[in-house]
Image 1 (tube, rainbow, N blue to C red):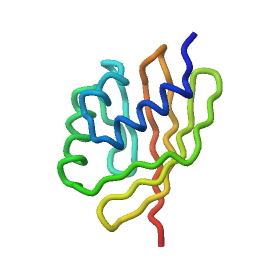
Image 2: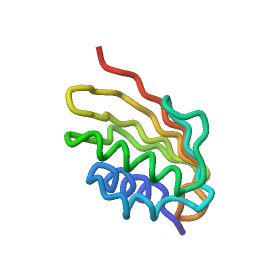
Image 3: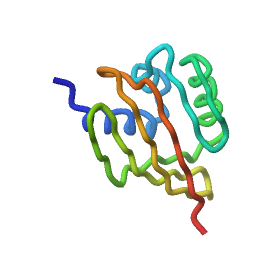
Image 4: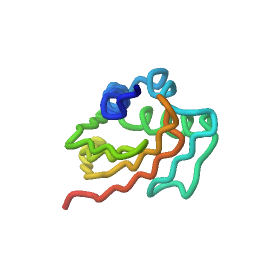
Length: 112
């Protein structure tokens, strides 16, 4: 049986390491991302290009997990994202299809 909590933690570790190849393994080909910068970005190749741009533009990127909650094929990842001097608290709502993500809805709030 798939352990969504472990998969979510492994995704977060890959993102924090800025390892685009490892991040890519978590996305289905039709993966869809929504976040404050994009209303709906799909397929996987477009999402990876977007993430690569984020990695390339932020040498001081840090992605710290605060909490992971799991419920019926979905996970909620509560995190702190640091991009240089900008710090954000965020939530990713992730829909899983087996061992890969089908969709992610990301929400960010800048720290004052």
